[in-house]
Image 1 (cartoon, rainbow, N blue to C red):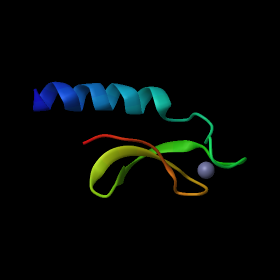
Image 2: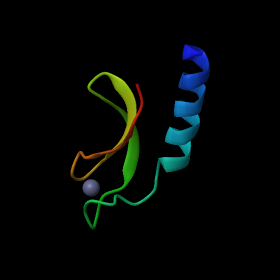
Image 3: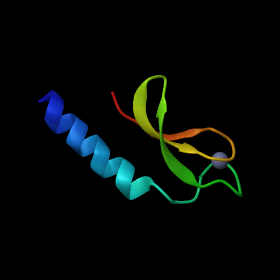
Image 4: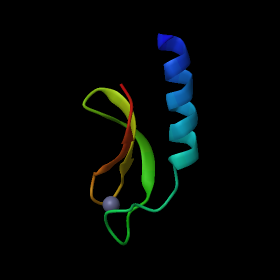
Length: 53
Ligand SMILES: [Zn+2]
């Protein structure tokens, strides 16, 4: 189950990567880690657009 969750997280991250940030005007979501977890993080304001445990 852990591995399936990771796969789904990767899919979600892939689909979110490159989309516009919802929290600022100029940012774009890039794949990164947030607090040690996979996430997409805005490259302008560092707000995580998605986070998976
Ligand atoms: Zn942003």
